Image 1 (cartoon, rainbow, N blue to C red):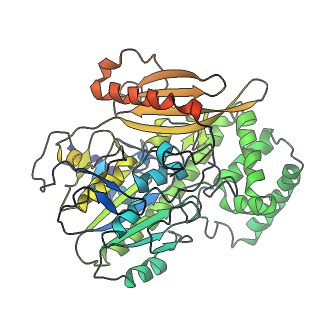
Image 2: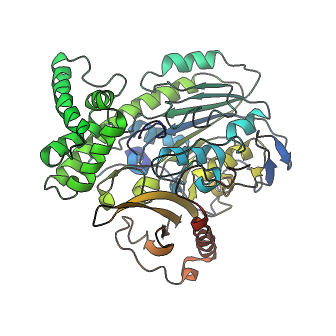
Image 3: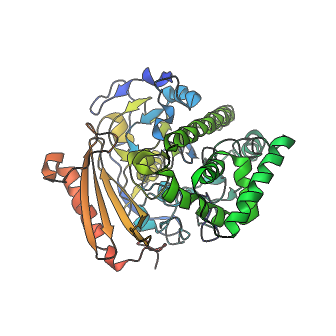
Length: 523
């Protein structure tokens, strides 16, 4: 995705090595956890209408969503510590689900899944670089918690995570211009204004790691007159060519790509000059027609990767401040803190840059950290799970049943070693280019565990379906696609999940490739 905002209006530690690995089946000195969560039904306002609510003390819930953060951002590199070194050190106090994946590879569908417990084709916030808002018939976690007395507050960076996108449903307060780069004032004011007689659900969301990589508010170099003059001169040259709809290739195209993705000062100035739609389109054209064949491709990707890491290090420092403020807030009662990322970022893997359009692990493996001392013990937990499990997990902590419409499950039993990982589904759209330059959109569905992944691709031109399998243990980079073969060899749960995915794909001929076609969109 080229822009973290609604494209209907525009385009869009080494410490980890010391963590204990908790295998399925090992309990140890773990706190007691409730039995496997029951199911219930919620209406569109989030009110429980069928099911049993257990009596329990309601914890405060803090959900931090880090946009565009790869799973390996908290893993040591061959050359040194993780990019998110502070978060990696803090992870020792969290339950870290190391095999977590998102339901899509870009913000709108993925964050909506995180806040509803539904897959994109069910909640309807999906599409190819565009998405329609969440419909009121779909209950959000904020609505479900508000219905049992929570005060609900969201501080987000807007764009795809906004009231305009329907994600304000259930929040008493929804701020869309919060910058984690300067977190103390607004966050402190928010915490000071709370009703301490009611439990809190606080959602924090940031685009700090998103391109253009680096500090964005204000952009690096904004206070250097020479840098500003240089950028303005360069932007003027590019703007003239973009307005003429000129295809920009060669070294000029490479510099445009680097400026757009890795220089916030340049990107903001060019977007203001020609509009983000036109600028982003020119960059994508170069990616398709120039970057892949460039003799400086590796150099370009290494530069982008280095700038991304720089942005992650800035995010890490800001997030550490945020978590410190929350730790010192002395909220009444217990607090469950959940830190997730919504998708990853590609730097040439599978010929991709950025995110969206693909469902490879570099884009769909995400962070999922939970600190809930009375409900989960700290440690690293193996077993496939996903962001679709966030809502069920929070509701279980609150004594509420898992929504019957959700394919997710509470992760408390997985953390306790009483359950194993289960196959997780993801879906997305991707544009394909024919030899004559014609573009068309295919739909992708994956079924994944930590051991294997099946990728199903549906072609709308003739309704044809192709399937491949990746053996992730032997081929973690997904470079060697194989025939799906006998699914029984992958286990009954995996075979059942692929069968369900195939049935889902079989419905695509009745759907267009536009947005807002979720299961609840007409209710």
